[in-house]
Image (cartoon, rainbow, N blue to C red; front, side, top):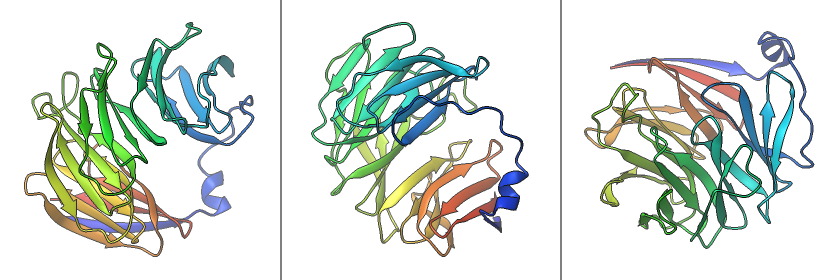
Length: 277
């Protein structure tokens, strides 16, 4: 295993070299908490403190449709396909919406706290959600009630991620796994088919804000307020590499090839780790 580390400060000179401003899209009346491109790349979806979600037509450089269903700030959004998506909110609700429809095409109610994150599985068949109520739920469009109610964490769950498996992925035959990251300092891996806990990954000392599967599905990265990034082997359920920085970590992300991992820190730095086993 080889790991090389590059640290970048978020200085104006670095930002300016990334490219020119394409357009500024304005319609929200509050801070924007989440945004996602659809797979086709023609629409951008945003969720805001103003309780709404907006689909933006990037080519036309204008908003296409605003969805005003939540009674509290919209915390997260995620596309199911190129025209439908899920939203979650502080109002405990999850809505599945579709471009052109004026009402949600599906409503998921069951959480008893703020729903921090929603994520569709790689095939768009199952939706995972996590909440301040210390649970993660699995939903499908054919049922009104959750398929699984995952209850092994002891504090709020902030982030969830699916492993890259199923038709159309590079790992079509791998087991479908959901990872959940919590303020209880643990990451848990779930057997989604049976709704059972596979592993509890205990290595962080403070809340875990972010998790990300490697593209080949063999490793999981986690970032925590304890200033450390752990890379876990899913086969062994243990840490294979740790990098410690100078600030809490709010996001970790692999590149497409799986040989680099980026992490952003609370001290205004971005670190890129080269990874090879």
